Length: 252
Image (cartoon, rainbow, N blue to C red; front, top):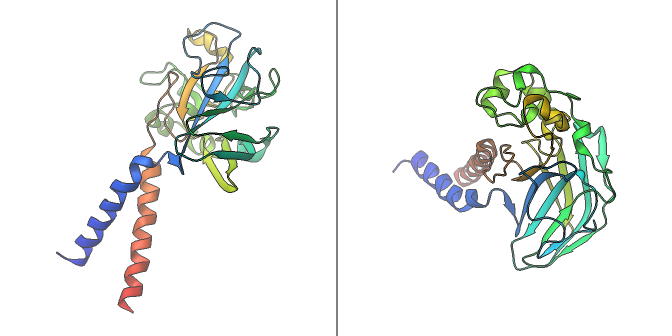
C-alpha cells in the first residue's frame, strides 16, 4: 500500500467518525425556524413554547411573527448558553437582547422574540418585499420558500448566489464559556431574504411559518436535518491539511 493510499484511508476513517455528528457540537444540536400564529398554516415549528422539556425566557401565548433558534441538549451535561447574538446582512442588523439560558440534559431551549414582533426577522431580507423572478418560490423545482432559500441549483443559476451568501444570518453564543457560531445558510431566519408574508402572491397561504431546519442545512418549509455537502468538504479539506502537516514532521 503506497503512502498516498494509506493517507486517503486514514482521512476516510476519520471522516466516518466525524461526519455523522457534523451538525452537532459537544452534545447539542441547533435548529432555525420561523413562527407566525397570525394566519393559519401547516408549517408551525414544533416543539414550541410550553411544550414538554422546552425552556425559554419568552412566555407562551404571545402574538408571533418571529424568527426562532432552537438548541437541543443531546448530551449528558448541563449547558449554560450566554452571549446569544444573531446578525443579519453582514452585521448590519444585530440582535442580542436574550438572557442566559440553562439547559439540562434532554431539554430544548428556544430563543425567539421576547415581546411581540421584536424579532420579526423576515423584515431584514436583502430583497425587501418580493424575491427576484429567477428565485420565485414556485419556479420549477424550487422549495416553496424561494429567494436566498432556493435550492442550490436554482440559486447557482441566478446572479444572486454570492450576495445571498454575504447576507446570510449568523447565530453565535457561548456554551459553558466556549464560543460557538454557525451560519443559517438555508436562510430560514430571514425567510429567504424577502418578506414571506407576501407569499400569497404566489398562491401560498400568506403565513410566514417555517418548521425547524437544522442550521447549515438546505431550506425546507416542512423542516429538514440534512447537513450541506459543502460543510463536509471543508472539514475533509482541513483533515487533509492536518495529515499533510503530520507527514512533513515525520519526514524531517
